[in-house]
Amino acid sequence: MLDDIKIAVVTGGGHGIGRALCRRLRTEGMEVVVADLDGSAAERVAAGCGGHPFAVDVGNEQEIGDLIHTVERDLGPIDLFVSNAGVAFGDADRLAASEAGGLNPSSDRWRDCWRVNLMAHVYAARYLVPEMLERGGGYLVNVASAAGLLSQIGDAAYTATKHAAVAFAESLAITHGDDGLHVSVVCPQAVATRMIGIEDDAEGDTGGFGGNDVDGILRPEAVADAIVAGIVEKRFLILPHPRVAEYVTRKADDRDRWIKGMQRFRRNLANNAYRIRKTVFPVTRRFATSSYALP
Image (cartoon, rainbow, N blue to C red; front, side):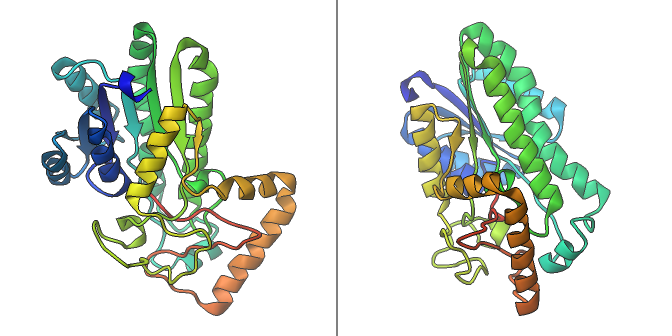
C-alpha cells in the first residue's frame, strides 16, 4: 500500500502527532507537505525531514482549497491526505467546566471546534474526493480522538466535534469505499503533545496527568507508527491505545450503566480536587473516557 503513495499532505504537521507522522512518512520515501497554522513550525519540520512547508488555516475552506491546488500543481496528485489538525479549549478548571455541562466555552470557541475538528475534514474531502475517484482512488486519514467514541469529561465541544468527525469518516467510507477511496479514522487516548502540556521533544513528563491514566501516554512517534500500520492494513478504525475497543464495547452494551459510572467518576474527581494544569484525564478500568489528547 505504501508503495502506491507518492505525495502526502499532513495538516497540523508542525507539532505533536503531525510532526511525527511527517517524519515517519518521509522515511517511507514519500513527498510530504507539512501544513500547519504555525508557518514557522511547518518550515522547521519540513527543513528537518526534507518536506514542503505550507501555512494554512484548515478551518477556512478557501485555504484548504488553495493548499490542495498548490500541491497538485507543483508536486503532483495527492495520494494521501491526513486531516490531523485539531483544537480544544475548555476552561482552566476542567471540573468547573464539567459542572456547567460544557456550556462555559464561548460560542466562538464552539464554532472553532466545529471548523477545525470537523469542517476541515469536510473541506478536504470536498476538494479531494472527486479528484481521487477520477484517478481511481486515494487515501484520507482523519485524526479524531477516543473522545469521538467515548467522551471527555468537562469538554462537550471537543467531545461533540470528535464524534462528528468519526461519523463523517464512516460516511465517506460507506459511500465511496467501493469506488477505490480508502478512509481511516484515528482515535488515540493520551498523547504526549502540547494539548496536555507537554512540549515537543520533552522527555519524562506526564504533562500533569500524574500517572492518573490507565492506558499510558503515548509518544507521538508511537501514534505515527500506528497510523502507518493502519494504512498498510487499510483499517478504518486505528486505535493506538487498543483497549479503547473494549471500552467502546462496554459503552454499547449498557449505555445507562456507562453514563452512571462516568457520573460517579466525575464526582470522585471533584471530591478529590484533581487539578491537572489545563485538563483532567478521567480514566477508570471499568468506565473509561477518552483522553484529552489532540494532534
